[in-house]
Length: 282
Image (tube, rainbow, N blue to C red; front, top):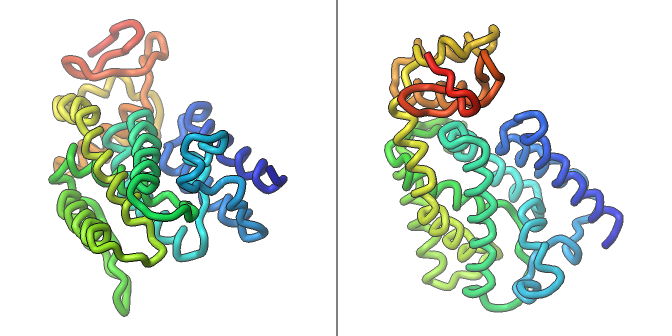
């Protein structure tokens, strides 16, 4: 591989290691990695080394299924994909946690590539994060259909609207289905979008366990685990929230931050909030 390709691979691995080492949100890590790689690829976009083609599927270059998810062709390509991660990926990770988000993102990205390989004619390059983003949207809508997300509308001025995620999912899935069935060739991998979306829907049962547990959490259950001003601020925002969905989002976020005051272990939700390691609870 060329030097620029090795640098991009190093950037991908570095930012994916960040959530494990520093407990940094996975979605933000992916966004930053994509932006850094896009800037690097302005020098040279290493299509031959890191982009995926259907003919690579069962060869030594099958690793491009993964690396192609971090390449983007132009400003508009990365801009709209990162908007999708910002407004869909971040709230989804707040609901399900880092591990489940990463699982959905990369598994659906793989199935998006597989759908593209099986359903698209030719052997053209596939790059971009949109297949995985559609996978996140499908899992989000199937697991939390009535959760509302904020979306920007680009008109003469930019306005922001809040819609149930299922409405957003049905709209985008319908459009992608029409493009796929009509056989439109516009340079956009609509089959990958649809493949990722369907894979996300099928992964949603893994998310529902989290949904059922999160509903039982009360803000007061976290009081024995709050140790510093930042955690107290998050707890207060949850307690002050007027809407139940906003409260749940803050509590889900807090659950990933707090640690057991006795042994420092992570918490889990079982009859309230308790330590995974020593079983301490209020």
